[in-house]
Image (cartoon, rainbow, N blue to C red; front, side, top):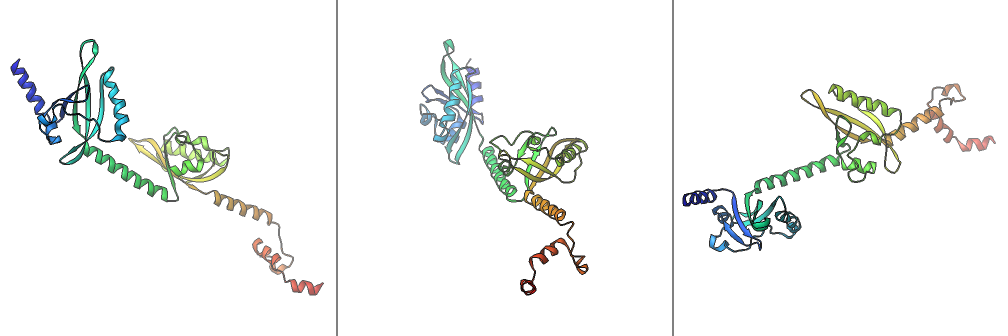
Length: 293
């Protein structure tokens, strides 16, 4: 038994992971050498001291919720603690499990901890890069999105959600839900389906979409299929709001139809454009007209 105890203690003391045991009052009953090293204190100083699972108020509610799991099956939880050390604050991920007594009553708690500070710093750097990338994406004319081969939205630019008047989470559904019954939308949908089937890029196309408040907007879509192992797994694209441009184009078309039959009275001006005809009407010599009268 003595040999087994010695081997067990050697195993615990030589662990790189931190190992602690504390009672229901949160006071330390045991700490291994790794915990003493990172805390910068001796066993005597740490014995019966308060083991705090967190060092900041903002984590208290989360930790308290997790710790309640120690008093009901499966009597285990995972919490994180920012621990002050000689190297500064280090984030320790604790895996805790209850030591049960008679009638499954909790007697004490044993926890093993691992320093995850490098991982936390990497995640923070990734979030920072993502935020910078989002600023860059949102600063241009194009608004970006991705959707699955079955047309379900995966990523939707915040500006697209604002443009369509989406509620939180509403931007991630079938993108076809936002289409009107305009005939031009059918050809756009056909191009997306062809790109999914072939894995090849299709030319840009235009769509008429309806916002939440009933307004109709025009966008130009430019899409690229994302292909893996010869199969299209997603469509990545960008939208450009061309509503104003479409209104201008429609106005020009209507003007051409309106002035299609306009012909100047004098043969020498037969080649003039409708725009010049309008200018001639509003640019008459009023003095000459008065003299004629």
